[in-house]
Image 1 (cartoon, helix red, strand yellow):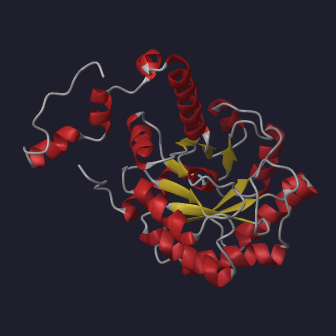
Image 2: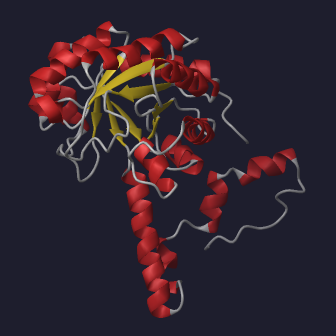
Image 3: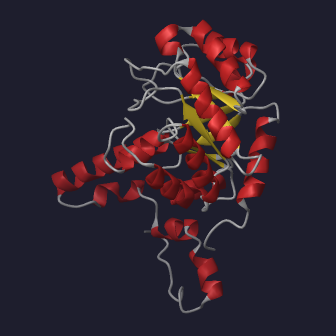
Amino acid sequence: MLYSKVTPEQKRLKLRELLASGTVQQFPGAFNPLSARLIEEKGFAGVYISGAVLANDLGLPDIGLTTLTEVATRAGQIARMTDLPSLVDADTGFGEPMNVARTIQELENAGLAGCHIEDQFNPKRCGHLDGKNVVDIDTATKRIRAAADARRDPNFLIMARTDIRAVEGIQAAQDRARALVDAGADAIFPEAMRDLHEFQAIRDAVDVPILANMTEFGKSDLFTVDQLQTVGVNMVIYPVTLLRIAMGAAERTLESIKAAGTQEAQVENMLTRARLYELVDYEAYNQFDTGVFNFKVPGIR
């Protein structure tokens, strides 16, 4: 009932354990709090909260338009709904090093298990688009140092994302990853790797956990967990998958209603009323207050 009883501190410890397990951990992207609960129910290791999803959910492109307050608030709403650790995309840290420091503490306050901060210019763009620009090594490492220095819980995960591969190549990505680890990064997110050999190159460059972004319609093929395991990846995210599938279903349903004058043809594809009530744990609220849930749930819809 209500929110997770697992504390943020416990979730942060769990994230550390998962990344040290020696097996690839799958973190699907939640687009709202209820989808985080579904991710947990289906047996995944953790929840990812994409900056692109948070922006798109507001009807905005992923170019750095969201604010720290918006991201911390929505990410906190998602994180508190699940016992799983949640990793959030903090873009470029929302400003200069002092802003980065505040970002970390706001995300700690919101109950996140960790975040990643990237080395793009601000305004930034989606990591799998062309024409990205990255900051110099001094600026990139200052962001990570500020993040590491600002955290109050030593188990809050500071992950550094680098987009430099698309600009300067894989050797530059290796060099940048090493520098970011030296600056205090607990893990590395090498964005837009072209193939498994490039993930292996990052693995060879650093000793910390690395993340693979398996986003659809991007620069990387959609590698399996087994394939990623062979090159030493520790964590894989599917950042926009659930939002894309949900919006695709919504679009098809609206088209069906417009064409037929009724939603009847789409009812069989819907989450039933009973299943929705199960996900929101209606029965637990009834046990707390019998005046809340004193009716029979239809089994069909």
